[in-house]
Length: 288
Length: 255
Image (cartoon, rainbow over all chains, first blue to last red; front, side, top):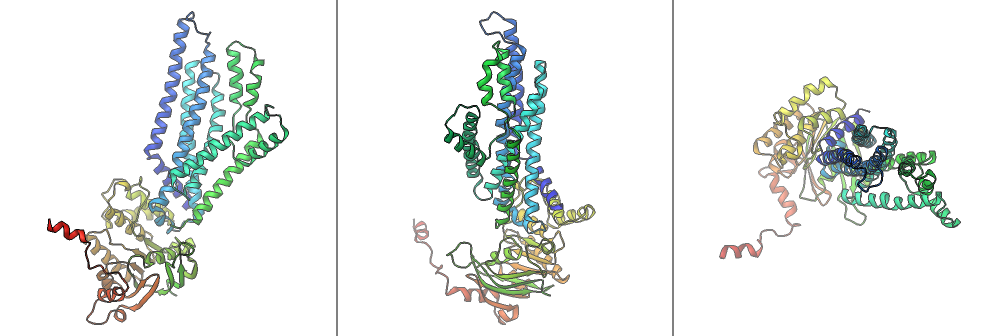
């Protein structure tokens, strides 16, 4: 346990000094403030000129726009930070030769792997968490009411980015960290992105062919797929309502954007354990 | 019981490649300084890395304090200063030693006592920069510092003075002498034959993964000769001619 704690502690210290993560965090936090203030100013302009030829804009609608944009921003910055951590936390120790000194000490490869993973998880949760807290504070500009939407979205974002981080960590013990990031991107963001989209079409009966549905269903459960909060569907419904249309017309879109169920969450937990085990196996096999 | 016992050690990095280490056998007792010599690519670093549990032998066995090198308890008694040492680059020297002291299981009181003294020995006590700003020599001194931090019973030094200035080399020689006297076994892997001759009791000369000559310093180096003579004799016949300079060197001189 001593070894795990020491590895985690000093990995966190190192991560806190990496400029790339600091830059991602600063750009993310400035972006969130900029989005909030920008939308608020726009809303004020619309409010002061109700006959300017725009559709009616309500405070609620603007806040929904902000929540929608924040979803994308948190997802993007969460991913960038996950790649930043995944590409450096273990790879630099192995690549620089630091691992030679570390592994000659009485620390098991298991303790080292667990320490690295814990540090990565902690760093990711703290950075994305801080961005989320900031987003919640910025929402006060709009009078509030949708704060819980951010919380649920943050949980989904952290869960998804943790998987990406573990994939990059595992791959970077086998190959160059940039190549590892590219492979992880193609695997997680492209292949599984397509699978998730197709699966949502199956769920909403947009694909009716039985064979295609079965194939997509199987493929969906073979790949790690991102967890989605119930917020996207709720946002679509609320935006349609705020825009003055009936809630019924949002049906198909909201159906496509269903939130993840217990099965997805269990699958996510399995994927996390699986990739953590791959990280350990890769570190254990690695000769330095 | 021998501190480290190596029997018929073989290692190759890829199937089909020649053996990097081919049937190496030796033992090292407490208080003994053992020099492992050989030209580049002889397999010296592979041997010490196998002893430190960093790479696994394909054939043969290693006993480190009566245990397998993979056993953390055995490695707790080992200090290893690698060739071209490096460390997490955003940490400072004192943080690196604290990190490694934690891995060694030293309590806080012991860490507070040992770390400043070890940093002072390495001449890094006033250094506040991060490792990424260190020179090669500073990293080498930190490499030696972290190796002695746990008061090891076996100290492996892989080219410990390659990047050190003459003062640093003198300090390392003094360290080896002091540790030997206190019963620490030293495994020194070096190209600096004069240095090995000064501090080692026994020596093994490796070539192409095999031990070509082994024994006490007196057995290996006949009277009136030195280790360099023996080394050159062993490898001269097998090595390509290097006394002829590339032709373009002379062209530059004649213009």
